[in-house]
Structure formats: C-alpha cells, structure tokens
Image (cartoon, rainbow, N blue to C red; front, side):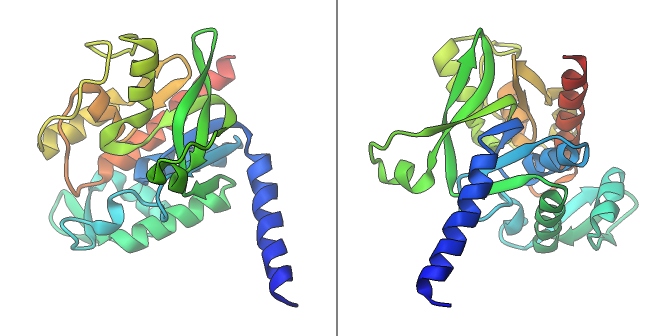
Length: 258
C-alpha cells in the first residue's frame, strides 16, 4: 500500500457512485432535515435518489440547534419518526420533546444512506434542465467553483423529479422564477419569500405548502414556506420531517400514475 493506492481507491469509488447517480428517479437539492427525510422515504420505497448538498456537511441548520445550543424541539406527532430512526428523545411537556441536534442529523444521514440514497456534498445546483415545460434535471458544479466565482462549465443530472429542499432561500424555485417567469403554482405565481418568525403558524402551514410548484419540481421544508410566503419557525423541526415525508409520498403517487 502507498499513497497512490489510497488516491486511486478514493477516485475510483467516488467516480463509480457519481456516474451511477447521473440518472435518477429523484434529485433532491439540499441535505437538511426535510431533504434527507424526503430522500429516506423515497429510497425506502425502492426509488433511485441522489441528494446534493452545497456545504461540507449535511444537516442544514439543524446541527446548530437554537442559537448554537445543539438541542432541538419536536412535537409528539413526530415521535414515530424519531423512534424509527433510533433517536433519543426526552419529554419537555405534554406536547413537546427535545433531542440532540447532532444525534438527530447523524441518525438521519446514516439511515438515508443505508436505505440506498446517495449524498454528494460540496456540490451546488446552479441551474435546471427543462424539456417541454417540465423540469427533468439539475445542473451542478463544485461549490468551490461557485464560491470562487470561476468560469467552469457545469455538468447535469437527469431526474424524473426534482425536490427543492434548499431552505430559506428556495434556490431552485428562484431559478425557475428567473428562467420561466411567474409560472410557479403559488398564490402570486412566484417566490413570495418567508415571513418573520411565528413557530405555530409556520408549523401548521408547512404541510400545505409542501407540493409540486412547477411540473417536475416539488418543495419541502423551509423552501416550501419561503415559496408560499409563510413564516419561519426557528429551532422546532417536526414540520421539517413531516414535510420531507409528504414530498416523498406525493412523488411516489405521481410516479405510480405515470
């Protein structure tokens, strides 16, 4: 064994996984809690899923908990998911439970990959692929290329469906808005932008906002609330898990009908 063997092992293994993920059933953009949950449920059902995360680590804002107190809050309705994932929870009151944000995201990443989904970090989605007014893929590049503002041509991923799980910025939906105009299936036809924090309202509206907002494009998590103009919710994460789960269910239903 020498350094070349190590280098070859890394390059060959990564290349094999990457090539295998250039054509998938679903491409999820964003490896936060909702994107991972969506990918987990889809992979559990036997669909080919690739999740693209622009940052070094997966998890979105979850590892930071609330203001860097790495604990999170969930509602009792989400306990079934946490129990399924093997995440330790503690009752706070009759309605709320607390969990470690680090344990939660670690368990979710592990279970998602074990279910068969592939996660690619340090890759950004900078554009979409549209054919006959339907989104059928994403255009990706290394995040370092984007951050450095280098002119390096990207590559593309073909997908039957794309999920925008990019959080507050709803990046994929904004690309569609820019490229296609006011055609999103939202009250205003475009990305409304999230409102200020109101946890109860945000949690109650996130499932309603989780939907197909353009042919071939679904939204979940904070991207769903941002697109439809609902509030943000802070460090309570039950809605994120339920939203990701619902997005997966909607996609599965649509695939079965095709």
